[in-house]
Image 1 (cartoon, rainbow, N blue to C red):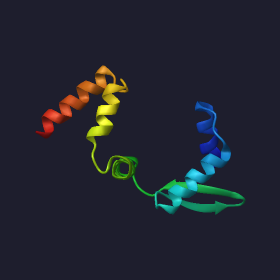
Image 2: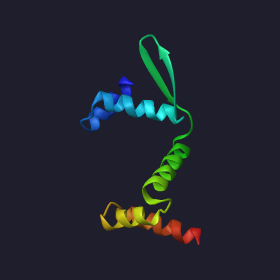
Image 3: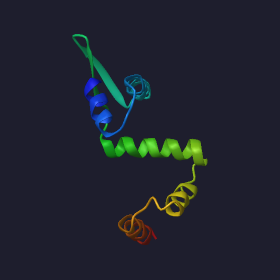
Image 4: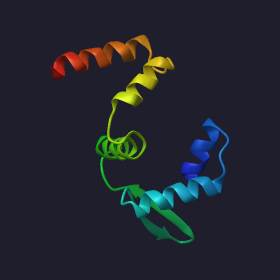
Length: 98
């Protein structure tokens, strides 16, 4: 857990307890497995990052946007959170999906 904390802290200020709570929540939800080595807890991902991300995004959409992706996508576009490259990629994916 200390390695995760140090990596996150290098990117932005964050409390150790926040990292600990988040990792415990992820373990409880089945995203992480924990084993003890001496006094340290060692975590590992239960599934591939892409699959885990898909579950997290689906859960977020269900809880926050009642299952609809449109409000999230509209917000990202309106708030300019998507670069030109991102917009082109999304446009390409939409065309391919049709």
